[in-house]
Length: 569
Image 1: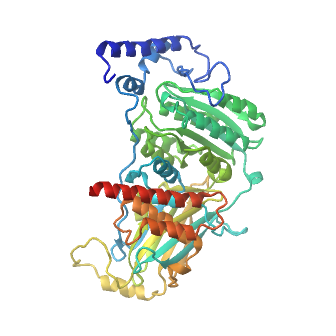
Image 2 (image 1 turned 90 degrees about the vertical axis):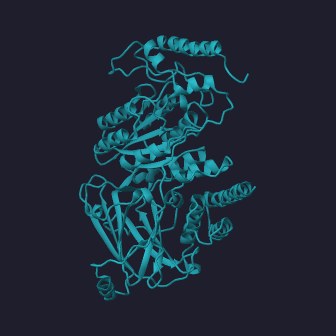
Image 3 (image 1 turned 90 degrees about the horizontal axis):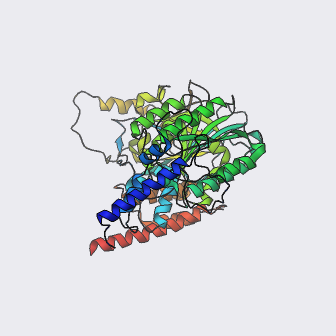
């Protein structure tokens, strides 16, 4: 059957509406949202219980509400073939950072970023046999996906993290230098972690039905619960057409009750994300633990389609909620309708971190192996500002962090939001530097008439052995005033061959990112170069993440080659 005839289409839509009415009428207003009347296993996802209006929301009858919530996906499914290649994934477009002249732009200022969603999402796309869209490739998130053996702060150090800078030869341009800024947060053992007040905010709308969405969410959250301590607390809020409190804040000495509540979740209805966000933060504030971990964990595909759906309004909402002292973790799930653009912004403005879970192994990495880093913030609003010496550096380019760039004035402005560092987290930022005396690959402008460039260079010669000055600002998790860290850096002219092994591996990851984005600055670097460099610096690789990267680079190279051949034909 190639097309649905009008009578058949009408009957199909009528059947959907009638089914919605019966489901809606069968729900008692006091029953909790999206939970079946009896416990079901994670593997059984047939059927869907719709979500009734929240108790504090007056509205039309359940039947009428259900009619209004017949999802657009259900309509589209009725009028297009089941085999249609339907993809509504959303990624922001951005241009890669250009080279900046040190004379014109001596300061480089940006917010740190510990998100890892981009890498996991790229892995999913490559493994499906496709090259990722450029907007999905955020190089800083690729680099920061991996752990590095950076030295942390000393026991008696007042700062919650340590900073290190290395400058070596650039592997894709022999005439340039590669600089690494490396941060390492103070580690925290499980028994040192403060008590946690967690609210699981789970999307149970109809779009979450597939196995890589709500079923995987249930598995991931159960895994997290099993690794929490008896002094931790968990509440569960769900949302679809409306929001509801599935489980009041419950101590983790009763884990079975929490697990049972997760097991009963089923998908159905539209997606009112804003309603769930409001309720989750309300529950978190009601159970706030002073000096503890207070965090909302949002699990969703990001496809909000009722209530507040505008990204700008959602960002305003989450920014307001962030002022309550409750932090945010955003975990993305699924494909086809995945809204990366929206979720990345929510995490950014919500004092949060952002991951993407495509497999149970990725859930284990984020929620078990890196549990303290995911839950415990040790420093917030972390900003970096670098002043380059024009006597040493002609131009520079920050690799990645395009959506984390700050105005130079923002560095000293404590009202400006920036990224967070979790316990034990490593943060890496890479710069490509053009040594002084070389032509800067920057956009040409006419010579300035009134600026005394020579004077600036002369002044710089007074401290000519200094390559740059690194400054960092951060706040304590519950603080409002920032602390300043400063260090002077000199280029010791080390070759890339003598670079630290971790720096070489990070360069390989950045190289893959540049290739996937079609960077104009990748020089002579190829997929084979990425593979060879990563393979030579894989190291111990206890969890196999670096070996996995090497395999992904091979897949990407093959796909790129196929694309090139197809274009030539």
